[in-house]
Length: 340
Image 1 (cartoon, rainbow, N blue to C red):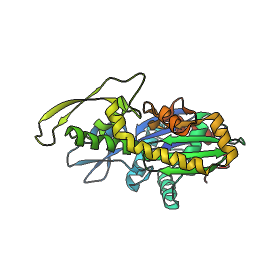
Image 2 (image 1 turned 45 degrees about the vertical axis):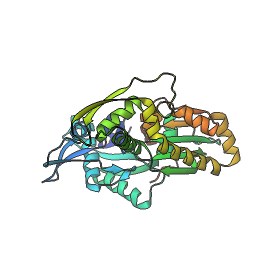
Image 3 (image 1 turned 90 degrees about the vertical axis):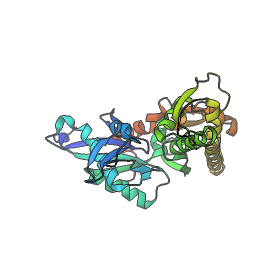
Image 4 (image 1 turned 135 degrees about the horizontal axis):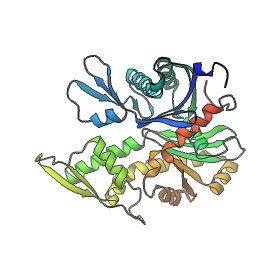
């Protein structure tokens, strides 16, 4: 650390569709939902993160809640900037009298276009970033899981986030072949809402569907340790009278089947493109699952049965990408694959 190191703050940001995590000095300082509540009249920030999520679906006409990221990319530029700025402020509560310049590494989907890269860079710079580096999510996930990404061997990562599923084969510090599809946690939530509406005639909001996914989300209809049914309460579609319905993991496995099949297809497409020498490494070492979607019960077994390749779930899948981004921040000069 140099004499004037206090003038610069180094942070790593996992800018996710569902959650944003900020790492400073190798510690997760901020872990908040990617959502903001805004005043409709003035456009000012009312709440951010957990507080804004509690308001989601419960606001009056004076307040609106916005999720600035959709499908892994910035959909609302102004809200994204307010969110990043607000989350960084949480970091600097103790030093409100002085804002150091920021050196940041932000992770992005591997399928990002030049326009999407520019949106992330501009938002980060407007939020106070002096030096902004970017890293692709599957690369960050691989580093966070503990893989040696610069070794001459194949590693396969499947990162199922909130907006996108990133599938990549990595070797020698680069992505050999990859696929980024916009089917992930948000799509699962939509599937559950649609299933409850069609099958049980009950209207549920995004938050309730999210709770169902967390409690009884499954990828296969036969589990060794099945979770208890989850009770859902809401209005009947036809009568608007309140009803209470127990939902089992088998029902959710059925409702998510189509989306998970699309992820399987994308994984097979990446394996088809993989050079034979790297394919042999993946067959020996297995593929790794990261992101919130990796927590779906039985997903590793389903993917293993489909591909005949061992599937391992990362130790802390929700934070694997953030941890990898933090390691990349410490080694900015060493890692050549960072986008400057």
